[in-house]
Image (tube, rainbow, N blue to C red; front, side):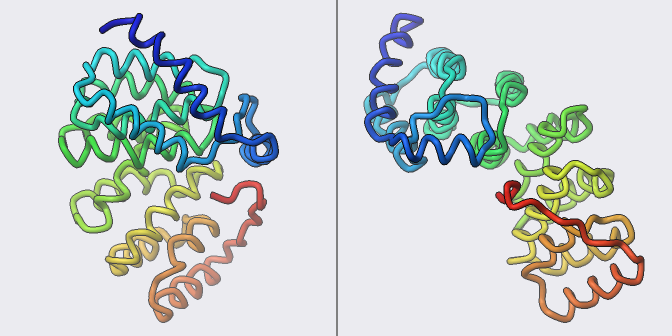
Length: 257
């Protein structure tokens, strides 16, 4: 279909988002995300609904047109248009291959907020890993990237499978272990988030990781990761942490995820 098709879709997609947005929500979202992007104030469910309606209207979309459309959406100055690009990738998982990770990495390096980083990591990239485990070799490279957003993505992309697949948890642990002493909030939070989710199904895995790294792990990671552990395990970790005299850090409410 080509560029003419892509260009013909943008006005209707933007209108669909604009019509469901509000000025009040736009102002709240912009302030909350501390973003320099523009906002329509469109709720995420509406963005997902718009992407789903598009996929129903175009069930046989060509991969070239999908990526061209997503790239065009990412040229927008509007947060929600960029979000729609990620939502569209979720609607066409069968069109995304390992070879497309370079394209997705390019998007990641343009992202300015955890809201987009986390969506693409736990959505399109995680779905790809489910379909094609060979994608994990790329994650291993991302886990040592200079960008903390790329490193965060490498861990979060494994979160779903790490809850039930030991090999994926072990890979996450391999990625996370060198990062536990990092000062970057979004790295500490990501490690704790994955550990917290894993603990809901495999508390022993989370407990063992935190115990092994208790002398290096941050207070934030410990609090997040141990949140749903059995009381005796959580208390044992906290006691051991106190013995190392690590002081818990304060976390600004603006960093909540």
